[in-house]
Length: 260
Image 1 (tube, rainbow, N blue to C red):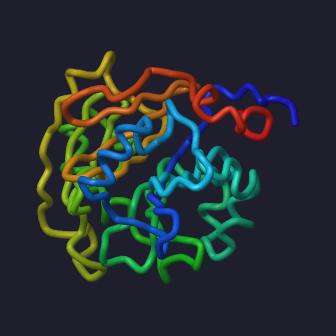
Image 2: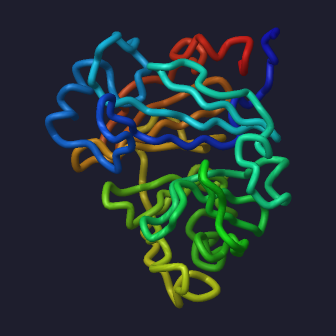
C-alpha cells in the first residue's frame, strides 16, 4: 500500500501494557520495571527497538482513524489490521462503526477495556464484546462541569492517575483537567450528582496540548502520556517532557504504507 498522506494519523488512540512471559495485561508497572523501561527508552518504545527475548513490558496500541483500526506494538509491529472497526469489534453498536471522537480506558468496575465516545454517545467495549447499552457521553464527561474549565467540549481523554480513579481530559484550546470516573454502572444518568474536576496546568510542554489522540501508561507512581498531533508525538508526565516532539513514523516505521 502507498502512504496515505492523512492530516491526522489517529483520530483516537488507546494502549494496554503487556508483560512478556506473564499472564498478559498489566494495570500498572512496579518500580523495578520502571528502571528497566527507563534504561530501554521508555514504555512507549519511541527511542528503542524491541530486542528478541526481552522481558521488558511494552505497549500494544489500538489506533483509530475514520472507520478503520490498526493494532500495533514495538515488539510485534502490526498485530492486526488495518481493518474496519466493525470487523475488529463486531459487537459494537452501529453508531460507532464510522469511528470515535476519542477512546480511553474504561473504569475498573467495567467488564471491558475501553470507553469510546462519538458525539453525545459512549460505549464500553473490548475484544470480547461491548456494553449491553449505550451511555450518554455525559455519564463519563459531564459537559456542564467540564466545558467551563476547558473552554469548550472534551476533545480527548485518557487515564490520568495510576489508580485509575481519574481521567485527564483535554479541550480544543489547550486547557486540561482531571475528573474522577463514575463510581459504578448504576451511578446515575451523569455518573454522579457532582464530579471532582481539577484544572491541570501543563506549562512544561513546548506548546498548549491539543492532541488529536492520546493514551497513557502508569509507570510506578507516575503517569506517562503519549499524545499525537498530526504526524508528531510527544511523551510527557505531569512534571517533564520525556521524549519528543518527534515523528510517529520515525518511532514506528512499520506503520509507513500500512497506515501512514
